[in-house]
Image (spheres, rainbow, N blue to C red):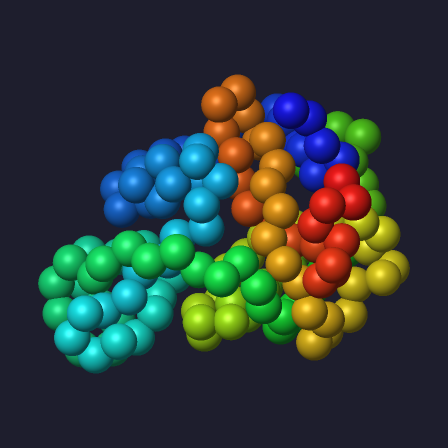
Amino acid sequence: MTSDHDFTGVQPPVVGEEAEWFDHCREERLMIQRCASCGRHQFPPRSVCIECLEEEPEWVEAAGTGTVFTYTVQHREPPGFADQAPYAIAIIELSEGPRMLSRVTGKPDDVEIGMEVEVAWATAAPELQVPVFVPTGAADAG
C-alpha cells in the first residue's frame, strides 16, 4: 500500500546492530532497546547499554509517540529525493526517552518544537518500511 508518507529511491545501509531494527521496521513495529539491568531505553541499537554497559539489551516495542525536540526544513533535493522538497527532518524525543532522527510528514511550515507526534510508516525502498512521524491524530490521514 502506498501512502502520502512514502519516499522511495533511497536504500539505507542495513548493517550491524541496525539489521534487526530494520527487520522490525519491515513489520511496521517501532522497536527500541531497553536494558534488563538498569531499565534505560536507548536508540540507535547497540550491543551494550549506554548507561551501565550491560551486554545485549532487549528489544521492546515503543509507544510510537513523542515530541519534536528540534527540526530543520530541507529545501534542496539530494539524490534519491527528487520532487520531495521542502520537507521537515526532526529529532523526535520518544515517550520512552531516546531521540530518533526522522521525517515529519505534512506541511513543513506546520512543524514546531514541542509538537506532539506519532509514528506512521513510509516505504523507503522495495520491501523496506521506515518510521516517519505525523502530528498526533493525523496518522490515518495519509
